[in-house]
Image: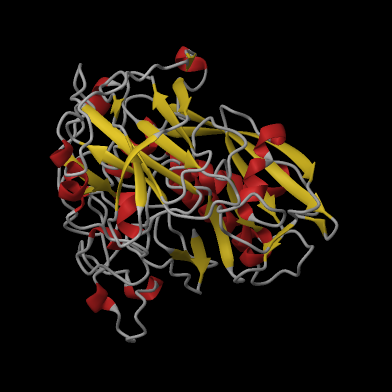
Length: 457
């Protein structure tokens, strides 16, 4: 999510401690069911290549990581190697069964003491829907707690695993989305290093250009149209800014855009930015409409007039990552809000040139989230905790001591220094943006993650 000047802080709902031992003592059997990949889209370079399996998890024990009782399942195998460089898991519960649910990863699926939390779990545990992935970084020790090392560039996978945990295990579905596109040689051999300056990680040239297809959906309803002219040309400045950001040498992803208009009368204004439910007016409900207006091999982006829950939110991704190629879930898309980008124009008018540039930055930023990127630094600043910043080594961060006005927020003006710890404001994944300011920096490791996403081919 990106905010214009105003901050939304998601509460830290859970930090799991001593969790591995607690689960290991629960008497879980050693047997592991084989993961059968029942759907494979083998499209070579003509489109995304994914192998997908959905399962109905059965719980076999219980534990209490934070005082709440969670049911957990057996461990399912996970494969990561140069031919399957990324895996996502998507958890979905029913609208009425509110409660935390999350995956728990294992460095060795035969050893319950090798369990660890990924970056997504260090911030909060999802309610009713949750997405996670491996890897979140080239050097995964920066993405997990406790620190572990996972390689996805070898010929064969180490014995990785994952189990699933639910407060209310009613009709929960778990879906594996595996990328089956072989990594290029420069992606396999890519090395990264710590950010020592605001310019660290920007000098990378990938050998091959990749492609990302985008399905742009203008949402119309009883409150009018999301935008007065609904065509690619009408927001060409914004789309070209997105293309410019993703075409730089550290990324090299070409954006192909198709455009459609949709009459979605319950979703022309969003009053609930959560994905907990699929109710009318909620973000989760909007993303569920991809079941009939979405494209499975594209990033589905909704252009919506405005959001009413907070005001000022520029855009939201359905997840970090969003579920690649999976339609009809409460996380199957990205939404950007037109009126939040206005500084000079009136509601219902076309956006000015500068406003469109900001829209292009938002499209880049939210696409980054959907493809697996976190904010380089969260709004409260970097205190040294795993939840304070992204899990990447080469992205600059902004230490909390840069909060000059002492408002407990490191804003854009406070994160424009030259070192690796007082910068990041110019990065595409900084937490906030504003009209007239360019945020197109994308580091090599950010580009590496973007290129490995199952939607990118």
